[in-house]
Image: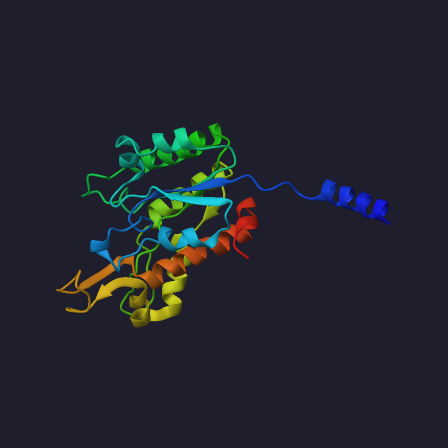
Length: 244
């Protein structure tokens, strides 16, 4: 009996899967994704609640920065340290466009250069055997007079879609899915998803705040959940590391 038990334990050990290699999920992008300083609360980047979705084999390293574009993120030396630190099997989630598309900003990036920069992020990641994931710029809250959501990233979001298709990169369309979410919530209720505050409602904003770009804690969590849903639907290996 003991011999049979011993053989059984050996066989069980032989078929036990090895522990998963620990990986890092890198987040690079702009203020809609970034970690906020306390003085800006309750403004919340969706990358903040995103860190709690995974098991102990995943570290989320959020390098997103307010006001950055594909170009300025690289020019300021924020991308190269990520490339240097990446390890095989990691993921990098790339979400830009908000600041690339605005011609009056110093971060403005032409459509051609925006595309070139996205391809560089992909190429650099793949050179380290890292998995790039492209995300369209997340939708702003913008309704027309009839209460229908309107797009504000149409051109640059389409560039992201095109680059993803041309380079066989998984795509998470936060522009389309964000718009669908806001439409579902409606003109008034969707304000709860954004950093919108009445005068005197929060000490960080004594005069109040009407922001249709940056999220409240609730909005950030809802967008992060959209990202999580796509991780599953894209059948990424990362989905196997989501907390049960």
